Image (cartoon, rainbow, N blue to C red):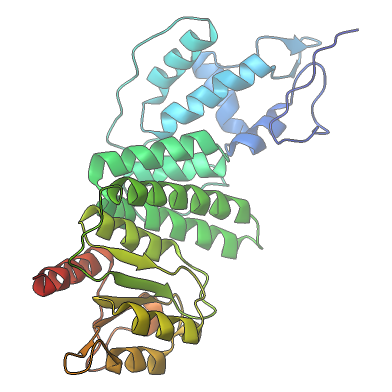
Length: 335
């Protein structure tokens, strides 16, 4: 009797798996594509199971699954299907080939599990497909590549945030399904953003500047936009003090008085967590030695604040605008 274990795509022993491999339906669900797509790839490009049980039923071996995963990764980055199939087959047969060129358009088929993308950037669609497949390696690789290619601000505004919003819409419209996709995206985005911050803040900190204080309001758990701002400011050489999510009122107030920040950025995702009295209080707080007391400008970041800022408070339109404001403030207070 064979000692070979069935294909394990989920971290647990699936009911559909046997010693002969997995079914087309199970493989399609695991990869986030439709069974029709797998059959089409088999018919058009020869990307099918090497062995068919009883001459009829399709069963995908571990080698077959690896080949189709390669196909998914390549098409997710914009490689034309025919070229991606040739590369996947070459790798499966032990041959190496140059990486196929990425195309600019998006002609790939959409599966019922695809995220509802309202943007045309190929990077968004490739990232969304990788996330739906729960392909962590591809998600991490694509996020790193887009930051390297376009810079952090553009990567956040044009790729990361739109893809994350699409995941949220999919979750809300599907009865809490696909929450794992949103969690996967969030975790890897946070990893990339913190890597940028650590790499940018590695040099000795400036001794002539107070940091920009970044905090999410009490009960606000959406920290990724603040992590993006934290990383972007580090890239620009602006020192920061990141307090993270759901910071109590007393903690924000105490940090302002102790640190005397160059500015305060407050994030809220929804009106339910917005706290305008706190923002006004922080903007009016004076700190420093007697006779030379100062106040910290306060930026209202996030959609929860509404469109029109109250008098005396700053309201950036997005990450790029917030970075511009804070870099300008940092330059104006340097000795």
